[in-house]
Image 1: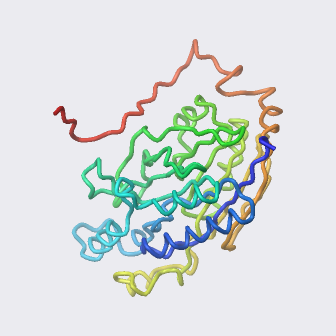
Image 2 (image 1 turned 90 degrees about the horizontal axis):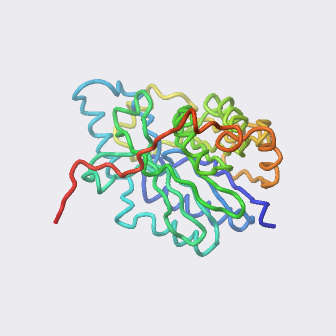
Image 3 (image 1 turned 90 degrees about the vertical axis):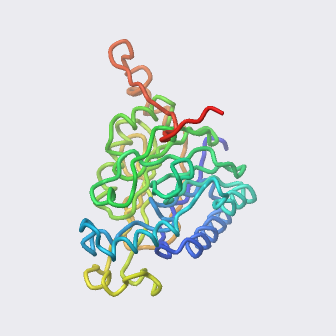
Length: 316
């Protein structure tokens, strides 16, 4: 049935700042989701190789502090360069198992010099093709100490059975205009990825669903004190101030009427499954459609720059 989509929310912890081990965990999760019949599996923000939790634990804003420099360098070494084929194993699994994937990564973008980090959301379709890499437009608060601001190139949507799927990173979901850009592209299945915690997902998930009359799937990671690997640089200093739980999950799904289909799931690592029925979108768009019959493009319009930004343009 083309109108039914089985979604898997991968609420898992990374092997923190270990690219190779985290990739293996993601690969195993994709296989497990496909064996349960999932057609789309979604992972949390920055899962590969992990969220920069140290910034809040090591006086991250201190100027020229060696601990922060060394942790940042470790972070960069464990980030992903898409152009170098570092997501090939994910693409191969997606193709083999005919499953689409949304994955949050730390991207060391070659087209921006290869040394800065972008919080990126990657979409791989069921044919194993990377169809979009969305770099987070505005890092939030202490994230700006280690992440660079992205661009509009990844504001894209993709066909998935009868659905049109798009996604944003974390607090981008609070930004009205990027949401509007996705609505205008026909999005009816919105993916919101988060580093974790119910306080992020409990309000905005239902709000976006009601505003857009779309399904909204919010996926968070997990992170506990014991998830810091022993090989982490300056681990003793991190653990001195770390709470027992840094990310408690909160993955959830709201329907096109803004009501819960899956309420936020807390303190549980693993895959959460749900079937979505496309017909519900048509039912709720009957009385409101933000980019269709309930829009006034003769009065208000949005212009979006989707060029991939770079410092230098060469003409050879």
